[in-house]
Amino acid sequence: MQAPIYDPHLNDFFDVIKTFITLSADSKLSMAGILKKASFPKGHHLLEAGSVCRHVYFIEKGLTRTYYTKDGKDVTDWISVEKTFATSIVSFITGLPDIRSIELLEPTVLWTIGHDDLQRLYDESHEIERFGRLLVSYGLVQMQQRFDDLHFATARERYRKLMEQTPSIVQRVPLGMVASYLGITPETLSRIRADYTI
Image 1 (cartoon, rainbow, N blue to C red):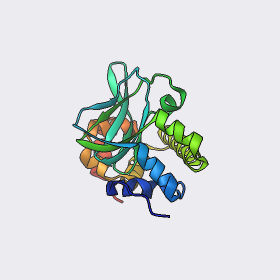
Image 2 (cartoon, one colour; image 1 turned 30 degrees about the horizontal axis):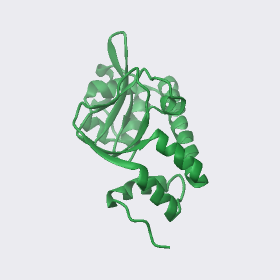
Image 3 (cartoon, rainbow, N blue to C red; image 1 turned 90 degrees about the horizontal axis):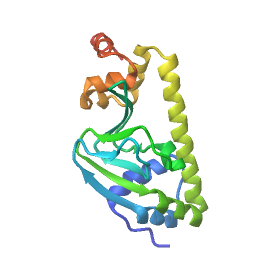
Image 4 (spheres, one colour; image 1 turned 180 degrees about the vertical axis):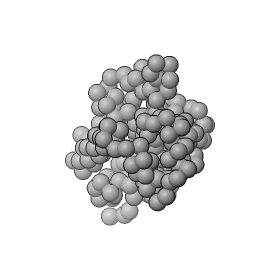
């Protein structure tokens, strides 16, 4: 069988998919067929609070933050960098509006996967349906780990984990947002950064 032909920029996408499941050539071609490439400027919102999330986004270049507003202040809930996904997983699954927004913190190039297109592929391919289940399970595990970190890890432990997993965030994201993401004050973040060692 001839290998599928698709945009070579999708190699990163399929490399990430491979960490969940090895797709056949036909499944890769089907997935490539529903992916749509888009570029947006810094400050663009992929999702506005009160809206239903109808897409999963794979970030080729740039980064996003997911946030909500509480007592008049923005609270950064999640930060997604290159070669990761951004979405509101609960809204995407349930079709219900989310209180969160997804904002681009840099000019960003991404690939969008539409909800209806993905559901159609689920009906056509057990392999892609399995990938969808694994991706949702991974997202839920990440949510639980984040909950555990915020409730049981110290501020220093949270910062260390961030530096081990995605150190570029500290250089690319305003420190107020980083502090919010870590669930600490900007002053605490400054103190931790001042004496942090690997």
